[in-house]
Length: 152
Image (cartoon, rainbow, N blue to C red; front, top):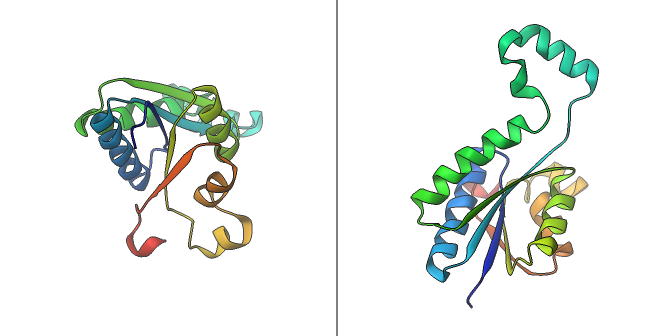
């Protein structure tokens, strides 16, 4: 199947970069646009103040979407290394599942790619995991990439 827009979620973790590389390879092979997405939840003011006191000049690293932007820049490097050429970055405020499903609709993604982290964990089974919830809610094809040892 040919895809024109591939969306992949990343949180900046090593395992999420494996999903990014897989999505980038597919995007490169099909000539698709690759959308790299990172959801973030802003820190409460008290947390931000405490972090700013400890971090000093580096306090900007925990403000607003900066951590998500940093994750996206790193993910872009992985995507380029895997051959993707047309890359769009999206740092969006909100829950990861909500952001990925909403963004997939907005960019008219044909394929949404996520890693399997949390899929077989106890917390994932009790609370639901990003890959499981995305697979149930997305209005497009979903690819769950094996990104963790032993599927955990």
